[in-house]
Length: 588
Image (cartoon, rainbow, N blue to C red; front, top):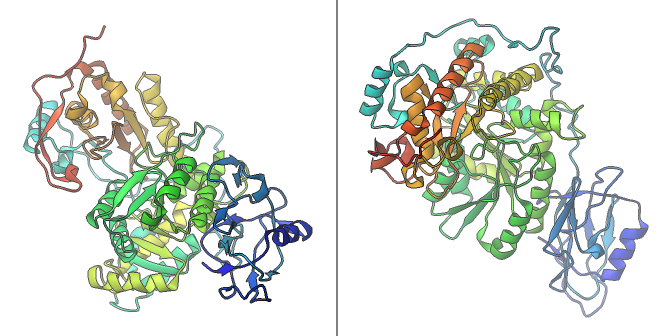
């Protein structure tokens, strides 16, 4: 961050009289001259500021100057539209679109780095022919794909399942695939690949260094993200570990987010850091974003202990809710004010982009590809699990703007994951991901996926099942606290207990996201994660019947207690047993 010296009245006067357009802040892309020192009022070094305009309407208000140690920007903010607004009217002004020189006199001022609006790059590959707006058929929606290969389902009895879950120590992760009828444990790596992706299992280049599959992968990810620096990894948690280690997370650090998922939180804690979630309380269609007011207050008090800020899209911890573009812009602006980089956990970014296109004003005519690139424009980098919106069974990447950071990331990658042109992946997997990125931006596919999940959720709502609404993109979340109505005490893990009962009654495997997974959590949600391009309408109807039966007989659900557990991420390996009695009242 560079310092200059300039009289306030001269700056404000200049800002008023020159042609102007507004801009958004970020911690990149401002060019400033050398640091200016006091020369007793004599003329000084000039500082060159470059700013891009951001449209015909609106103003940037806040986050530009600090004069003689006193902030022009008040720390209490209000929000208006897509712009970051402060309640200090003195700071509400626009900046020249042209280059402008500020000359030295007395006083010290800090100029914060700024970023212009998103503008699509001209050298990107054109969207593929499948990336067309969704067209509804005359007689309604059908899956925009057909089955080429099938996998048999093993049908079991309740007696079988009770025996199996007992042997598994009441941990759903210990069950084998032939003990499950429908598997909704996760949407990570459990989807069906397309015929073109499967073809790459034969054509992938397995050269150790300089593989053509890596070249294909790099071009595909660059086109998908607009980031220049691409580092492949074997899955998302590896990306987190390498990024957080390289950024030097330690015991003095606290990482804010709209919602850390389990591996993100664990990788930060493994390095000694602490996490804090500021989930938005906005009662709109975009409930997965960051609470801007809480983030601002936290950074004001704890800025020295925050190395970066994470944003998860969609918000998997809190109902799979999407994050709006407006919210991302505001996070970017406030982080720029405090000089904090922003990284996006982007594993479901295509689904999030579909929600923006469908529900956020101003994006209805944008392509999914452009929305994804604009979302990432308001960040410094990303982590990605290709097992979600890469439509693949394995893989992921880190993508950043800064070449120097990329070199440090690659150094750790080579030691722990593999050479920088494969990152622990086979060439065939790199090619499968490349193809998956072309397919995931297909609006026909996204429309069907989002609508299928919503239809599944609505069937549950119609039966009185308490679920998180509006529905997210990859899963339906049952509110276990409301479902069980205090049948299971908080210390006996209501969400996990309900997930166990759903398996016993119907053989469906789900995932309890409550105090068993996140010990500090008061939310108790059962996530029914939908694998991509796998299940048909009849499968969902069967799952609804299982949930309905358990709901009718919820007084029979027993809580769980832990017999044995490990440290971080205990839910993967803990052993449990049912408590003898539950706390249910008698239902009429």
